[in-house]
Image (cartoon, rainbow over all chains, first blue to last red; front, side):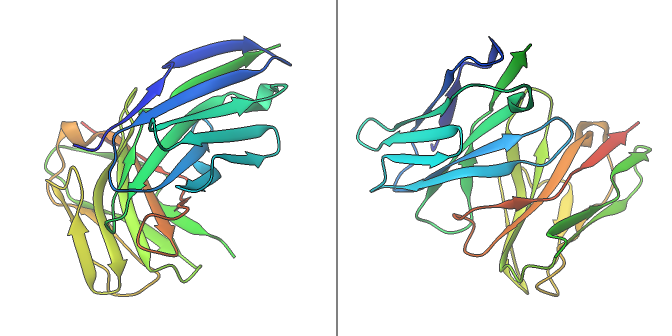
Length: 112
Length: 113
């Protein structure tokens, strides 16, 4: 069964600090891995998309890495801001059409 | 360009009532999908469509119906609401077959009493 496991479940950091969120998956055959940010009360918004051949992708202060051999991804947030407080969701797609596997998300709280 | 529009934003139903959650997108996306999100859990796929006239079941389809008569619209019907259907519902669309970047609506908070 395709699975996506995210850790930690929740994280609290101080404004200005860096943090790294983890995503492990067993989806096969792998197509791509996406990170989304979901603010409270809103729909998820795409941050990055990585295919098999990409091992790093950046979007401003967000940098995602992918190790397709170990089936692991991480999302690194640099110089955190209060607005980074949100849930971060890892989504992995297989090459079959129509369905993606969602992780349960990591809830990040940035405190002043 | 409004993106993905969901209505209503909030809804309260009594057990046994039926209703339709509306979803429309103006990006000419072929793929549309419905998810539910329960507290502390990830998004779970209810139904999806890869084009007008084509729908398929996701992970948790029981109690829900969908249809796709146009590219733009993908309504979700609750036939006989149950308290277990209390959740936040999200509609999403994408260019391809669902393995590309998803664009999400703002969600519908549904409570079934």
